[in-house]
Length: 243
Image (cartoon, rainbow, N blue to C red):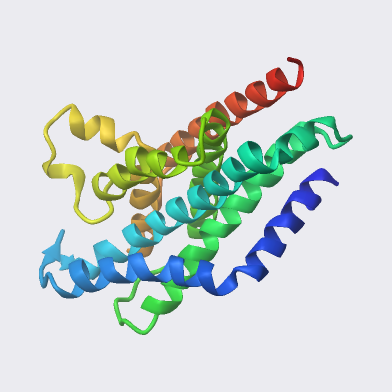
């Protein structure tokens, strides 16, 4: 019941800010597609660059959509509205509250990715997206939702949320196999970047888009991140409850 309540709150927020959320999901990715995809006429791995770029932008949209949906909202609720304190004294199990936040954030990320898929559908690139692609999008969104949840718990002021975006989301957006392949990066740095969740999500969605199997390693990496940040979130909120 607690999960449904949190998801209903997310749904109400989505309906209220539908146009703002949709525009935010469209503008940055479309600028990237226009500037990098149509402005740079080149190939990648023997294919048109758009075939490489579109799966990367879709993966990035799940990251940014999920992270922003949870980080800013939770920071405001915890620091100013004191909604987290109200949740702690309510009969709602705290793990259900956390799970609802993760699912809600992930669904927001999938919506952002869906917007990009619709906008790029008229481009005849022959990319394939199936149920496994959406599962990867959901897992990637869940990872960044839990990450945003943990960081929002650690935030001291509302201004910390944009800082986390600059420290984490922006570097990943450009480094993690989204716009350019990591193959040309120096050894060591390349391996470290490849273990980041967005790198694995991009690689798996890109593999599916060209008709290949995504492999199990990427799923394992995403699940490890999801478990780690979920445990941190649970420990933090239960510790705060017992203070």
